[in-house]
Picture 1 (spheres, rainbow, N blue to C red):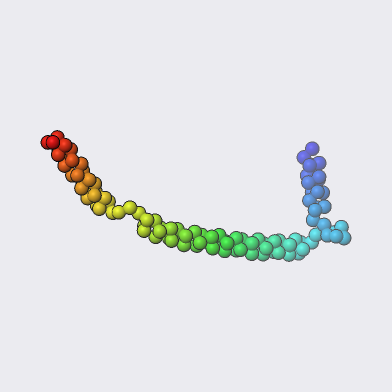
Picture 2 (cartoon, rainbow, N blue to C red):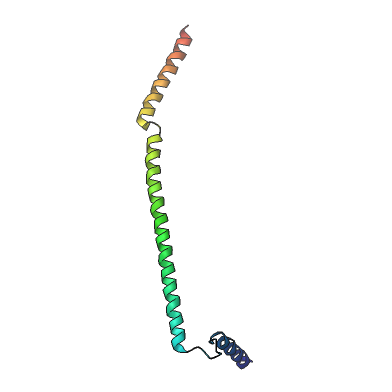
Length: 102
């Protein structure tokens, strides 16, 4: 049974590797096809890498610009906010004390 499978496998793959004239493809032809496919693959991978690098650079620039805009839009420095809160507390305390004395 194993030999039938091997024969069938070999026949199918030999059929795929034939020239238009029904001759088996030569080793030289197979090597040329492989070289052409590798060349195409390398070119396609380089084009993809360039596109990904451009997208990454664009994202980096956008992040840098966004960071600067966020820094400008942030609320006051915590020290200033704390001082303002202290002043608000003093105002409320004074108003409560004045209300008790009236």
